[in-house]
Length: 108
Image (cartoon, rainbow, N blue to C red):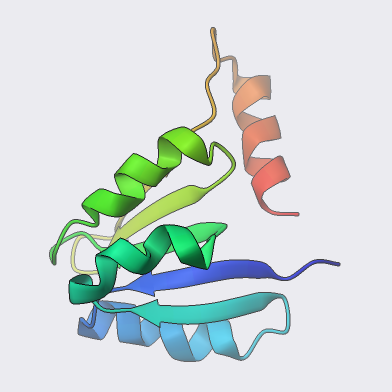
């Protein structure tokens, strides 16, 4: 099974909470990226970019979604229990079954 490369964008406490947990799993190759190093994001070739919704927005990651449609961009805010997921995949019509397939494909 191929390790999925997860880039933790930012240095907030929220991102730090996920850092420890994700590094404990052998399924992920976890890298940290400071907001000042955002230009290096494409070179890291991430499968997932995780960031704090209340901190700096990773504009480079949003741009990267267009050229890397399988990448997931995940924003989290534990204060409001909010998680937002962006993907570059395009679907014409989205049924519940389609949504379930997208979720399942990204969890492999």
